[in-house]
Image 1 (tube, rainbow, N blue to C red):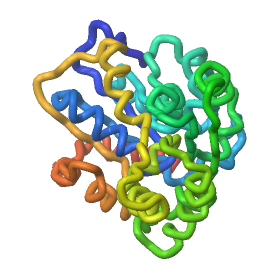
Image 2 (tube, rainbow, N blue to C red):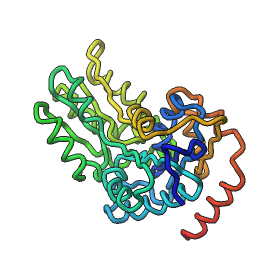
Image 3 (tube, rainbow, N blue to C red):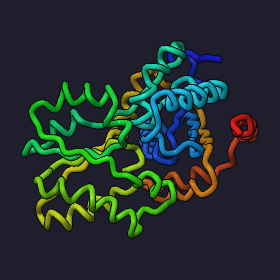
Amino acid sequence: MTKDPSVDGDGSIGIFDSGVGGLSVLEQIHTIMPYENLVYFADQQHVPYGPRSDSEVQRFSLEISRFLIGLGAKIIVVACNTASAAALEYLRETLPDIAFVGMEPAIKPGAVETQNGRVGVLATVGTFDSRRYASLMTRFAREITIYEDSCPGLVEQIEAGELDSRETRIILSRALSPMLREDVDTLILGCTHYPFVLPLIEEIAGRLRGAGDDVLVVTSDSQTQWVVLGQGATRVSSAQFVADLSEGASEMFEHTPSGEMRSTLDQRIDKATRDALARWARGKK
């Protein structure tokens, strides 16, 4: 079942990620499009996507996309840098009647914003190894120096709600210290999970750099809202949020930048959608 986003205003915007990271994208879309129906799918069974092969990520992404289409999605936002790198073009070729919006590390904005030409990028191994990332580097990073770190274990810490734990601090300090020693003045968060630890990143960077020597942090989620609008999404008369979240994931709503998403989760989830989610989950076992 497919829907034409240019003419059907009653369909939903489907959003998925390997876990709760895409909630940072969902919030940005909701902020600018508060009357859209949004369906969020958190694939916590397979998190993290970063170390997985392209073929695995493509298979997960296709299954989830078909599920979201079955719920009436007119547009699907792949709210994961790794899945976008591995599966976005595959999804567009396989499901040509659906508009797909992907994520990518904000290399271009980072290159524009840096004052000294030294930029740090935090992303997953899957993103760093992708052709999409290599293309971004070729197009936008020729005149700057890039410092990269895959932050092993950080996605798992965020999924566990460990946003300020000792282990999370160790992971981030290990990633940021070498970059800041190289005088990086701009930091790109190339994974949708990472904005959840933005306060900790700012704290660590401030401590390592010193007062008055700020590091600009650039994320890709705030750009997605405009891309979605460009895909032809239309406003509908009422808001309906449906979240497929594993047990404990709802706590992540408390850590979104505005905090307003918490009240959304407390709304009643549509029973038909809940039943469909349960059937899909049983079929995967």
